[in-house]
Image 1: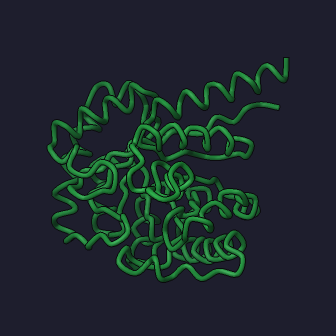
Image 2: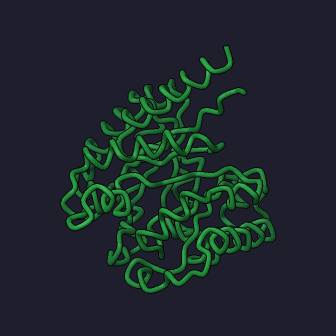
Length: 281
């Protein structure tokens, strides 16, 4: 069986308050240099976000979000190393105006963690620009999402709610072959529900759409490593655990993996690919 190597989406947060790397890449040169590093490490996509979606995070004015991300996108997409790599830029935003400005600046993917629920115009922008659209499962903004995690069967309900958002996107003019779905790990899901959802990604596969998984450094991973002190788990430990989970998830066909540490993820994928190839020889 041919190994379907997933795309690696490297996270580039140009925010002061993201949960694991807030403030590290707020300066333009720092952001561009980190993008180069992610590409050299093996990233196929650079996902640039200007608004934190960590639990409890406050909303950011659209003007401020755009100030943070647009200049970075413009610099990256004109960079020789980016052009030679054939990598893509993704804009991580819930605002349609930012998505439109980002695509105008060179982004080719819109990654909306709200699945179009935060801004009614998002699907229209995706249809107009013909950008690839990542639709994530989402039930509410960061200040309330932890109160919205009531499920009878989390995998089935997430799949059903994503299906409804996909139908809405198509009705708004988004081509089905431009849609990617994301289970929205960490959004309106407690620690156990995240694990139940990861274990049942087959429910999402039934929708017949490409799947992006973003588990990188999230609390449900840290909670396995240190159940009583999840917040104290270092990024390096979270990265190793994320790479292990990535390797296990490659039993399924995934479109992409969204991660902070591209190197450990690329290594994990290389190992799985070598094993799969050996099995077919």
